Length: 177
Image (cartoon, rainbow, N blue to C red; front, top):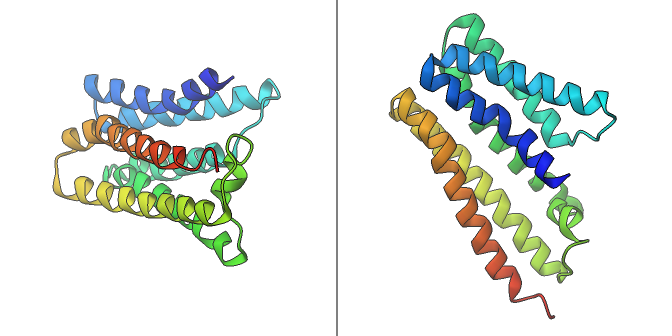
């Protein structure tokens, strides 16, 4: 099931990239929208759970993709990752006021950590999502669309993998505590 989730999460992005390489950003946006709708529809059709982040991604691609296509303005689709990253940061930030850490609820079955570590982990992901949102905005506004598309797929993936590895190394210190 995890391999299927990975495929579902990455197919619209990969399709966007491939269509962009052979066409333009408007066709690529349409392809990503259609792929996202079909994938979520297939999950629902086969009674598979659709996670909140997948619903958020679908809403974002339909909203920002729709604006991009209707208004023929690529800035909307380029802004989508920034808005999504800021929404994810807020989603992690707001529950902290109630001493709830969303990261903990997602990972506590896999790893047992002291409460203070959950708090730091949650906060590090908040900062990371804010960083990604700002970085996407900067790249989208200062560089060509061709560069942004490459960066969105390869650069953001590399940065996320690096951050995840750093987090895993940091968390390994607490594994036996």
